[in-house]
Figure (cartoon, rainbow, N blue to C red):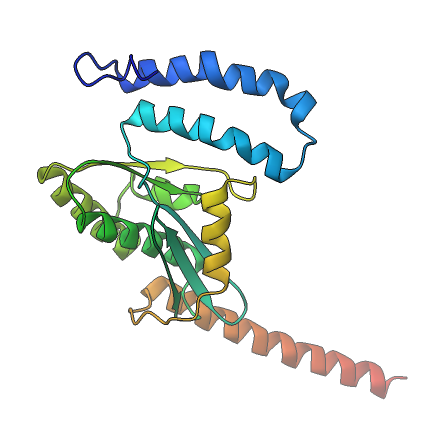
Length: 226
């Protein structure tokens, strides 16, 4: 793989990925029925092999970030994991998980922009966030436009930045760390709440109040007829 990805006679990214699937992934998949039940600490030893192959295919360095968003009943948060640093923030509780994922991608890009021009990959487990950047329309999330604008600007400065989807909760160390950091984020990020998130929040509050009134009426009705 290193020979094929040499900068002097570099094979295309598609060709390198085909070699990866044929020579590396095929063997890992073939043996998974045997080692699949092993402990996570043992399975993690396979990660560097697969990750190194992906970096060679894409030309990315080990500094490629992983991001994740999280939402619970009281807060929305996100985190980004880099090779030597991490960052995590809480957003306004009204923000959706989609907003958290998009914000994480934007912050990963911003962090990359402070480094030297080179090849990078941003890994995300949010397929919807990544797809939103390929089909823009008037209903697109406002931060999506910011991401594409920054991505284009960095491209003119010599940066090559790819976006890659990874599955969540399958033991990928960087993704698991980002997920844990997002859940435990304490620093608040002051940013406007998208209009769609505000509408959904208001709709949810009104529905909860209506449901509470409905339940109360039904409870009183059954009690009066008991």
